[in-house]
Length: 170
Image 1 (cartoon, rainbow, N blue to C red):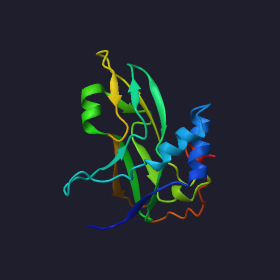
Image 2 (cartoon, rainbow, N blue to C red):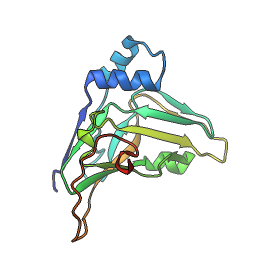
Image 3 (cartoon, rainbow, N blue to C red):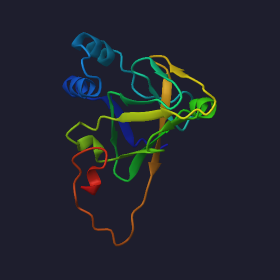
Image 4 (cartoon, rainbow, N blue to C red):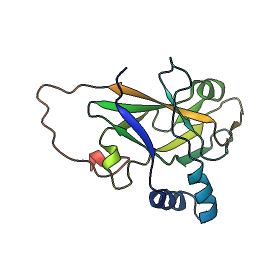
């Protein structure tokens, strides 16, 4: 197996900024506890392709509700690889839990962004059966799979990233 990436926490300062921007009025003592208990993504078994990302807090989503989750995680990925993020299979199958961008693509240069490459997950309970999704703090809720990619022979891009969602189209 190729070892092509490493997960780590974003800095505490970045985590505080992102949580306070996402959840207005959240106290520092709560944010500190969330940060202290971040679990780095890991595979459940030797044969698992996906690295489970663990919920940093309890999540409850009624049908058609959406949440933005700052994970506190960044991925340092070798050039020529990407991290694709999907809902955990069981949550998608049982509850139609969807990522709002269908598949999250984390590029290898994202970790160099101003936000330290902080991975956010925006997801929606797309249940058409009135099912409520409940995910406990510390449970796996999405999975990331490292995938190699190629470029065209005439590719000459030398632009550098600085930002997250939509930053490459600015």
